[in-house]
Image 1 (cartoon, rainbow, N blue to C red):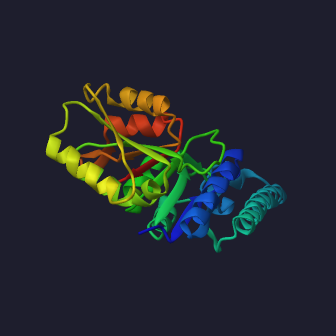
Image 2 (image 1 turned 135 degrees about the horizontal axis):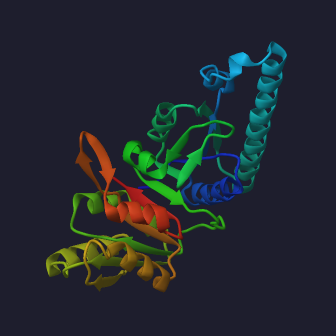
Amino acid sequence: MGYREVLVLLDRTEDSARRLRLAAALAARFGAELQAGFPVSEFLRFFSSVDGLPQLSPEAVDALLNRQGRAVAEALGEARARFEAAVAEAAVAGRWIEVDGDEDGPLLALTQEADLVVAPRELHTPYGENRLTAAQIGMACGGPLLVVPPGTDGADPCRKILVAWSHTRESARLLRDAWPFVEQAASVAVITVGDDPPKDKVEALRERFARRGQTVELICRRGSDWDAPDIVLAEAEAFDADLLAAGLYARPRLQQLLLGGMSRELLGRCPVPLLVSR
């Protein structure tokens, strides 16, 4: 079991370069193809609906569009050059993908075509108006999503892993998607928050990890759903985790999926890469 495609979503930020280094390290570790998705904005399509643009002279419109076109092309070229360098350094297969960045649909569809997606908390289309959140990606991609917080150093996050676990469908799905990380880790701990889990469930969980070569440390903490994010983040810090893994929880409301409090807090606050799945 493993990942055969690692898709990293890029933009024009310094965090994007660090995210690329991390994704390249993971592709090398898992023997996967490294794919890069870069959202491209069509400036003319967006501004054709803006009231102020038709009031400009034709010359001013041309100058504006030319400046925008050059800026987009420069950002795209720099990102692609970084990607090609990362592919060469990691000695992995690579695929560069330019995707419509003015709408959510094409970007979300792209995330459904890879085994593992690596993304920021919020992806901004360079020189465009669209923004795509990690929550949107996690709900749509249908698989594991690695959310990389700002300032991450780009190191391979497979040294120490903390898994937030409960006896739920979301945790079951998370474990299935997280096994490649778990199997590669130097050390793994599992944390539960709330009532102590049944002993038979704990033993079954230990056996599942043992079949993958891991003897896990089980951390049981009392607390409410309200306290859970703070407890989990504190334990991640105490464990010196490089990666936190947690199920992505949501609840239906007016035919829309809204994130539960635990998922919302972890996505917004986790200081290390966060692996989620739903």
